[in-house]
Length: 225
Image (cartoon, rainbow, N blue to C red; front, side, top):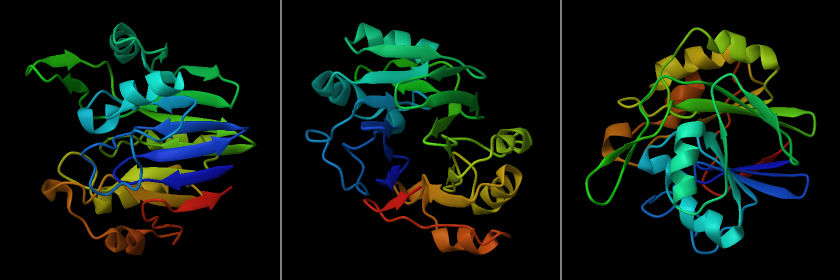
C-alpha cells in the first residue's frame, strides 16, 4: 500500500488497484502538489463538511465516477449535486472492494458554506479508520483531544494522521497526547500552515512525541506500508 500526503489534510491511499482520496481540498490550498483537474480517484472519503475538506470533491467525483464515502447527511447533500455517495455514521463500518472503512468520533464543526452565503448542515464530524492489506490507517479529521482515542488505538494502528494546527483543532501539545493514546506505529502531522491561524512548526510536534515515531511528510511525499 502506498500512502501519500498532499498538504493541509489531503491524503491519498493506493491499495488493491484503487486510489482513495481523503479530504481533497486542492483548489485554494497553497500547500498542495495536486491539480484538481487532473487528479484520479476511485473513492473519496470526507471526514466532515467544512469547505477546506470537501474541497474539490464534486468535480473530482464526477470526472472519475468516484464513490464518495462520508456521513449520511453530507452524503445526501452531495448526492443532490449529482455525485455517487455511500453514507455512513460514527461507529459504523463497511467493506468496500479496496478495504474496510470505519467512522470514529471527532470533536469539531461540520457546516458547508455555499457561494450564496448559506451554511448547509453537514452532519457529525468524524475520523476514519481504513483497513486494507493487513494495515490500519487512522485519519483523525479535524478534532480536539478526547480520551476515547485510547479505544480507537485498540484497532492496532499502523499509521495515523493527526491535526496539529491549533485554533480550530488540536495543537502540537494535545496532538502529542493523542499520539500517546492511539499508539500508532507512525504518526504524521496534518492541518497546519495552510492559513495564518494554524501556522505551526511541525518539528515541535515531532519533538513532543514520547515514542519518537513522528514522520514529517512534505506535499507529494509517500510511505509504503
